[in-house]
Length: 289
Image (tube, rainbow, N blue to C red; front, side, top):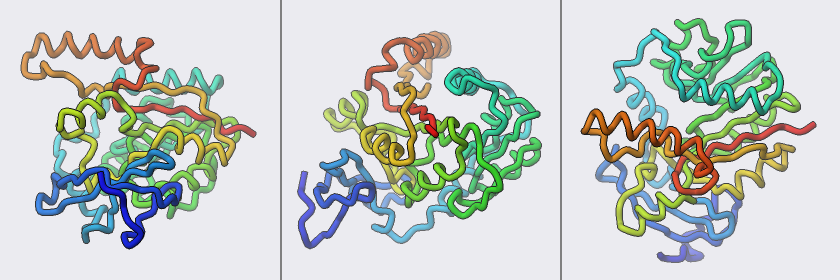
């Protein structure tokens, strides 16, 4: 690994430290001719790509990815994944929420698991996904979170798999603080490089599936996420790791595939989820008055 010299003037996009190294070079799966430098900050332990390294449009890329999934439908079916998330949030909140905002809500699946009587709103930059969510009767802001003037605060705000995509994740976190009620819950899911899975893959020169620039730009450390949110009086209530339902070496063998998925579901719910084995990191914060 090569230390970024003074002439490079690369600072950490999170903590502004100059103690940054060139960790690895990664080819973009979307633009094969473009290579991105993955940086690592030795101060806050976060990693990141520089979106300005190549001239591309992030919004155009995301709209292309969204519209490539033509199987999206207005039809809604409950899922065990979102039911578990809802149950866990209600358990932490210890009351019935009156409002929820899901940032990066896609077609609104998570919101649909909550009662119609609640204020159920979402933020989604994809026009395609927003149209489907609106047809489901949900109120969706089809803009970047930072540009929205909200007329209320929310009891629950969730951001599942959002921070890794953002050009300016700190402005995003600042905005989240301004729209959450006191004693409200903030849920954040990020891919974590601070996991055994990522370390093993890199050790054996295998690509971690989360290193996909410029779709994924940020890999925030646990320490920095807690530190930054603590400035706004967010207290970490619960944290665990999950396989995300994607670790399955038996996908091509139907019977074993089904059995292995059930096995991994119980693993994700067991004491193993307190250990940094897998690479999906769930963090639940409460905003203290």
